Image (tube, rainbow, N blue to C red; front, side, top):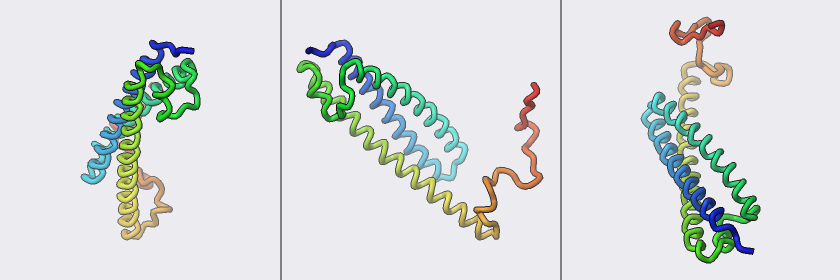
Length: 161
């Protein structure tokens, strides 16, 4: 039984879209690492917002991938086995797109790991500084507000509005 060429092309387009998304997430992870190393919390916050938006985009692409996989009868087929299941005319493109996606995924995992480790190291340093000042970090809580402190008036929200 020959696979639907249009669905196959749609799947390959989806793989390229996933690749672009992973490349963008890799760049954001690198930017996050840089922001942490430069102690730039505002930039870190902005990067994390962008990362959250990209993650939602990735989730949507994954839903589309699951639908196309089911339509093409590729459930359970690993990325490396994809080209062999495609029509002969599309195998070279399927092989190229699958390999690019795999490499982008590996790069993303590496960048995300570096960002995570950098964040963890800096958080440990902050805990040491807090402990050195005589405060038990485990008892300090989140540290966003001191007892009795209130946020500035322009940061308050009137929920009755």
